[in-house]
Length: 199
Image (cartoon, rainbow, N blue to C red; front, side, top):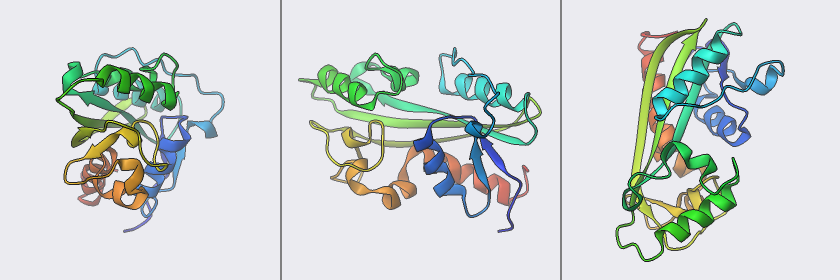
């Protein structure tokens, strides 16, 4: 596939950038907003993944030239009525602290028989402050009784995807890139690009 214009991710999360670059690097030059230090933080005030991804995509793309892709994603646990959901990154009380997030999740899940959960990812593509597309992906699985593995980030050590006996953190980046919620959302995005519907 021919190399396409640079794609700017509306994130300062190095783990997220690395993962998306791994998934898209064959067709895009992928960068994120750390390359634009004057850009403001976009407050995620939405109550859904779509609302937050849209806020970031439109907010960033209205301030810089080029294609902007924003991601909002998180973990939904059935026994916790869908929590942590859009608050996944701050569930433990401190934004981006994966250790605290995992500790709280294990505490909330203590004694719960229903361990079913899913990761959801919503991507919004924008340019010049205008939305150009929405792409979604999910992966179903279960919450483990204990954390396992050193790969990945976030809730990966506690999430066992359907059809597997190991956590995402144990499975490693190559397997994760074929089945994760973000990989599935990126796949729908690249299919749209390759079909000529966008960009």
